[in-house]
Amino acid sequence: MNTPTRLDTLAELLKAAPDEIFIQPHNVPDPDAIASCAGLQYLLARRGIPSVIVYDREIEKADSLQMLDLFGIDMQPAASVATLGEEDWAVLVDGQKGGGNLSDLPTDEVACIDHHEYRGNQGYRFEDVRPEVGACSSIIAGYFFENAVEPPVLLATALLFGIMKDTDGLTRGVADFDVEMFYKLFHFSDPGLIKRLNGAQLTRPDLDAYADAFRTIEVYAGIGFMRLDTPDDSLLGSAGDIVLSLDSVEVVVAWAVREAGVKLSVRSESPQVAANGLARFLVDGLGFGGGHAHMAGGFFPADKLPVDRGLDTMLRYRAIRFVEMLAGSTD
Ligand SMILES: [Mn+2]
Image 1 (cartoon, rainbow, N blue to C red):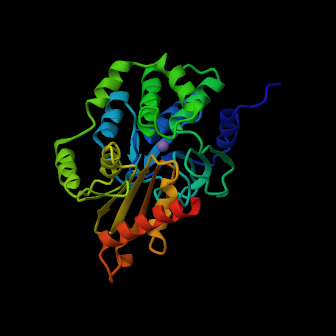
Image 2: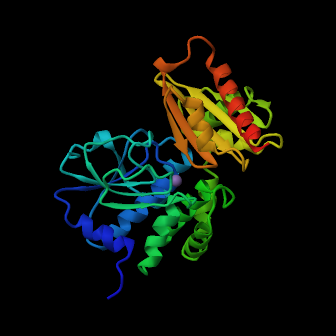
Image 3: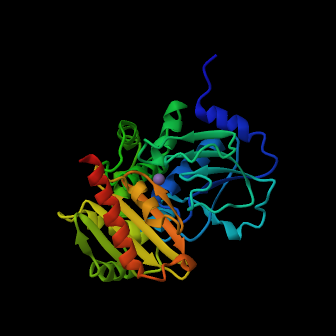
């Protein structure tokens, strides 16, 4: 008998679900999260296991919304699902418990498929966390090919787009496995759809928010600092990517002040500076932070805002100190 694939093991577990099965991505789902959920939902459906994709917080980015439309992906905001309860099971996708960007819904989180930093066993009965992989879409693509399931054109394209976005076009945090999955998916995909998604990345208000944010950029010792004033969290990372493309910038610290608190985004293309380490250092004692070596985020609530000195100054001070500490330790 063949060894069971990961999908075999997961499907076997889910068959014992006492009630509904939900697939939950991280909050404010991005293209990688959306594609991964849709791919998994399809694979489970083929095994006779129905599931509902449920997410918390809104879908903010134009290309994410367009994805749902173009690919016919159905996702429900958690607040709108009346039947969501403690007897239901959830598979977490592109996020983990305690990650700070994933709401704890009443469901029992029995499984987790993710590519973020491993947060330890959180009681899952099925776990596939591969931090070295650049996109969760690659992991889900692997589930297709490991089980000899040909991905339908729309799903292949969605997964391809997820890999492109999370690895910034196969240049950021990318592993051989991402490239291999990209290549395999490409064969089944419709590049015309990718073109349409790429043409739908920005709305007019996004552009205005970028313009305002870019006026706040300051660069010190290869670190770009930027403050964004928009209620749209998801722009923070993409605005940071643009700042990172500046010649003089290797690390980006971007933040947005919301009523609830401060949302941080960190990007690094410096091999010495791990974005997740820097994010944790920035929020130390104030909130939580984490992510990947190249992209990370953090949050601290408004009541933790430093009163003795300005927020902007504190973030600059901490970031510069972190980078200088690293430089010192390698001397
Ligand atoms: Mn991802």
